[in-house]
Amino acid sequence: MNLLNRLRSSDVSTPEKSLLRKRMIWMLIAVFILMGLIIGFNLFKTIMIKKYMAGAGSPPATVTTTVVKEEDWQPELSASGSMRAYRGVELSTEVNGIVKNVLVKSGMDVKEGTLLMAMTQDADVAQLHALQAQADLAKVVSDRDRQQLAIEAISKNAFDSSAADYKAKAAQVEQQAALVAKKNLKAPFSGRIGIVSTNPGQFVNSGDKLMTLQTIDPIFVDFTLPQNVADQLRKDQIIHLNADAFGQKSFEGKVTAISPKVDSNTRNIQVEALVRNPDKKLLPGMFASLKLEMGDKVRYLTVPQTAVTYNPYGSIVFVAKSGEADKDGKPSLVAQQVFVTTGSTRGDQVAILSGIKAGETIVTSGQLKLKNGTPLIVNNKVEPANNANPKPQE
Image (cartoon, rainbow, N blue to C red; front, side, top):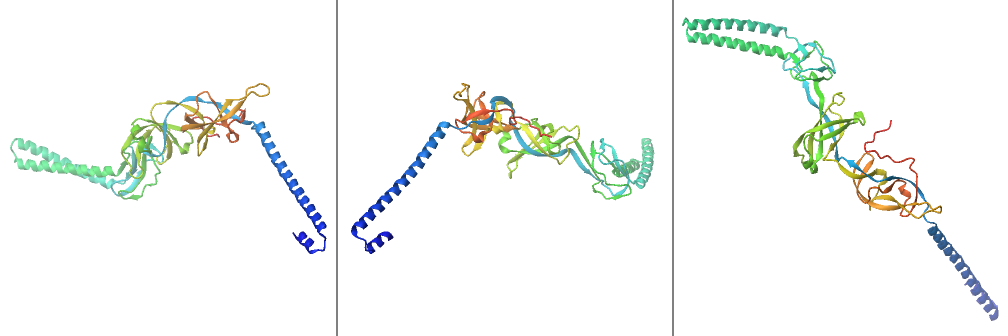
């Protein structure tokens, strides 16, 4: 436009202006044609590249595979629990006194009735002997009065008084004997002594905690289960327990009691089980994870958990299907995406309820590169874990 304005403002003749306009028009046309050729060439190149890529197909992907098969599956419920002693008590005395002797050591196993600790009781024993002597004398008097009553030498009232005196003296002996017995601390049941911190010469008050006694073989485990399994719970169900302190070592037990009520806050049911503990490794207060067998065994299609891909649309498994033969005439495999319904899991495995069949070959690793129709190269030298009861590697 600036050029045209200059031309108008100049003294150039009309034929020269006309020639200049024609040249500018042809120049603009040439520029537009050149731009069109460039754009057309780029579009043509893009289309040809797409056609080439479509004709070339997806590059093959290296994967691992396994054959789907049915396995026996024990339905189980998982839970967490806490250990509790079969019997456990904090031992103490009913009377005050000075400790004379401690007859057990920390961690010692004792039988029921074993003397654990004795308190000073000399004065009490002397008092017992005195009362026993008085009771013996009262018995002699009572027996003599009984003989005299038989020949009517004394009145019935005199005999009743001597007999009552003897019973009173005998009751005092029993009372003193009970007091002496309270100063001897004995094991109320068989078990293992805890940490003993009481020493001879120490004064103890009634009710002071002196030592712990626990029966830990067998041992209880308390746990909770949701209310929706209440109809499946029963006594004597088998449990398999793993204490965190012992890694994967398993202990077997049985359900011994089921609470008759549901916790209104958690809607859970309290369950008690008894576990054999012959080595006495399980201790009260330990945390434990356990599995409770629910019903009879069933058969499920089982695959490694790595074979299933989860996304918002569902659970996916890639099946290795037969494809077209390659250049050498060998059969090839291609991936086919299948939606499946998964069930319970155990270890490295997951149960498949629908979507695939037994005998089909599925991809267990390398799925991120796959889509429908992707050629597969199978390399099973290193396969994903597929163990129902895996154990940690050292």
